[in-house]
Image (cartoon, rainbow, N blue to C red; front, side, top):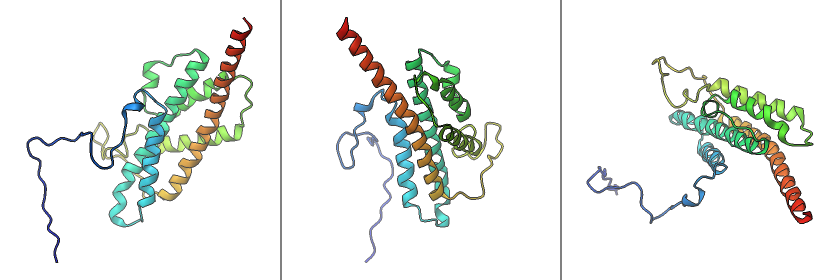
Length: 204
């Protein structure tokens, strides 16, 4: 028995956004919460990689996978910049913050990590994290190569011959752990300052 398949064309009154139905996700509570955005892109990429089996007809999925992972790294670096600026009393310029190149964003993070007082950072972790970020930046320097077939001069964007997405996912987990290492320092500094402020308030 053949399944009846009918193409549903657009018609008057169709809408994309409704507030009832299956697989409803709630986003209103995350308004303005920068920290939720990077992790969401990484989780989406992880789920996609987990479903890919390596068939030739899946080759095109390399574009959203790499873009999602790269966007995760860009947003995470910008989140760290926001946190360091709050702790250090600095303000990154709009031009620097709005750029898409990963290395300058990482350099800003690295240059402001000293605002974590008394921290003894593992240099190997930071150097290795930097190496992975630089590799990703070389793979997709401006966040264009996996979003568009051509650059702004309409020259074909170069792509690697192949990418092992399983290995790529593992590498992104390592980057995530590196970011978590820095995040831990931020959390300790924030908590320490909060305790000092509370003790000062109690004393005076």
